[in-house]
Each structure stands twice: as structure tokens, then as C-alpha cells.
Amino acid sequence: MINTFKKKSLNRILQEIYAKKQIASGFVVEFGAESGSTKNFTNFIQFKDVLKTTYCDKFPKHNETKEEDLEEKLTLLDNSQDNIIIFNVLEHVFDTKNAFLEINRCLKSNTGTIIGSTPFMHRVHGAPYDYSRYTKQYLEKILEKSNFKNIKVENLGFGAFTSAYVIIFDYLKLIPSLNNIILTFCLILDKSISLIVKTETKNIYPITVCFTAEKK
Image (tube, rainbow, N blue to C red):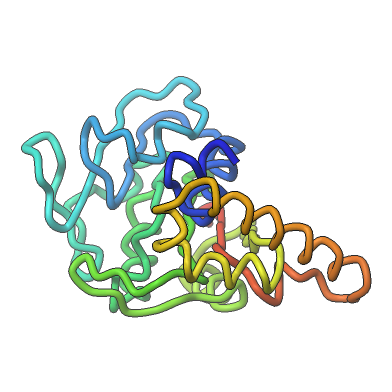
């Protein structure tokens, strides 16, 4: 609840919780990130013996940020990275097949790991373009076809009411106290519904989809 008073979206809150459970080490690259930004997910992922962190973006704002386009061949060397982090980027990439293949090429064989997330229930947000929303099944399939193993894809969410809440968050965040009352109400309704339905409601109405996988 505290984070919603800070005007953070539920999508972002769930992603940060997921990121805090992940571990990165060695040579790390984060896409869609700016050097020194508080929004980087490397701020939440657990670092262990990290040797170097590189921040990449298609339209970098700072000299310290490396310019990379996931729809083209990356300048990163083959088998050079231990972890590649990619949160809230794939929806802005039209050629996701190339993106996953290039990420796989740059990761170290057998141990290199991709850690990422993409929103499912979220307004259109061009940066500069917003192309797609991806399901758990799609991410599992494209990671498999892109030469990854130990693929773990997870839907995060609560149910239909919190998914509906996400849609109107841009307006509710203007009145934080009301926002939190409505969010609490939605969470209670979704929890109640989850007790009487067989399918996990987060798998029917995911807010965000998170994943990890290792290069074969």
C-alpha cells in the first residue's frame, strides 16, 4: 500500500517484488535502463560478485548508457554476459524473435541467464512505440525456440478486479487515499473469488508476466 501512495503502478510493484528474488553476478547488462537511474531493476536484483554492469537503451539520454537496438545485431560480444536483465522493454520491440536470439548469443553458454518481465494489463505507452502484450505461453515458446533452457515463466496478479483497477490507475493515483481504498476493495473481491474457482485467477487476469531462462 505504501508504494501506491508513491504513485507506483501495481505492475511496477509486482515487478520489483519479483526482481528482489533474483540474483545476478559476473558481467551484467540491463536493457531499457539508464546509468544512475533509480528506475533500473538492477537496484532491486540481488548482486553477488558482479564484475561490471552495462546499461543499454535504444535512445540513451546519457553518455554512460550504451546505445543498443534489440531489432538489430547487438554490439555485445558472443558468450560475454552472465546476466541480461530486460524489464518493460519487449512490448516496445517489434522483432522479438531477433531480440531473444541476440540476447541468447551474448549470454555465456550453459550458465548465462536472462531475467525479465513484460506488462500484460497496462495502458498503451509509446516509447516511442508500443507493439504487443505477451502471454505466459508465448514467452515459454519463444524462449524455447531461442535456445534457452530451464525456462520459468510466471503470471503475477490477483484477478479480474485488480486488473480493472490497473486500467484506471492513472486517474486514481491523483487521489492516493481513494486509490488505496479501491485497491483494497479489489484485492478482497479477487481473494474471495479465488476461493471458489478452480483456475488460479492470476493466470486468467495477469497484470504482468515475469521470466527467467538459461542459455543452452
